[in-house]
Length: 327
Image (cartoon, rainbow, N blue to C red; front, side, top):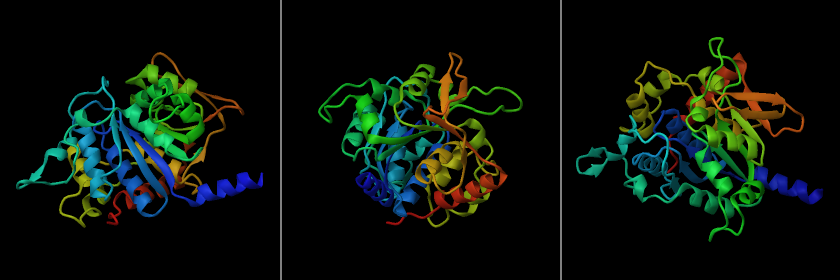
């Protein structure tokens, strides 16, 4: 017992290893969420050990690379999936091709997602290198990569299967997926689930660690402040988050913070930003509807936020996403 307490205390005092699994390019909240991770790493709270992508579009990975490079972390491994369900071009990942004269506007090394390694290989390498029960994962896109991880066998990175790696290495999975409250009085079929229902069903059924679900209703109720986009990123002439936001949907539109909430909770779970549902189990039906059944032995919970929490989270996310890099 004493040894367990010592290990737990040591992990709590160390930066949290985080894997960011994203459909970068489909919506701009992924970009802002990645900025929040970098801000928290600058504060010593986490370490971004890999980014894996579930949008099969050539500029998604270069955009991730340029954001990581902007924050001084161009060496973070990036993995991509093939055969994805959203191969269409993005409104904002085109920033990877922007020039200032002959130079890249945002320096980065990765030219195309076609040159990046497979996401499952990157996941396996990242997990194998970490201490047991230390890694958190923020999945803010489709469940495809993590479902494929569970199905993976042993390889050069580890003699463990994907299921064994997830069980042994991962402490918590935070997902932006599903909906756990009616939207306008109706059941909402959430995008990240509906676009790859079999993967979402597998994740909900088979993922071996606790899962915290940030439902559609949470990010919808906490819009990112347009004033922050307009004023807080002016410490540089060109900022990859601010420009991406304006390309996606210009201010004064205030985009929901769906993906940012998953990142914030998993890296700061004890700050009182959210309440949690009772324990239970989430199931995904063949239409993509998520249903929560309370069960004291269940591994799933979902986020809840009252009006005060929503206001605090909104301001906290704006502060973190716009925090200048510490290079």
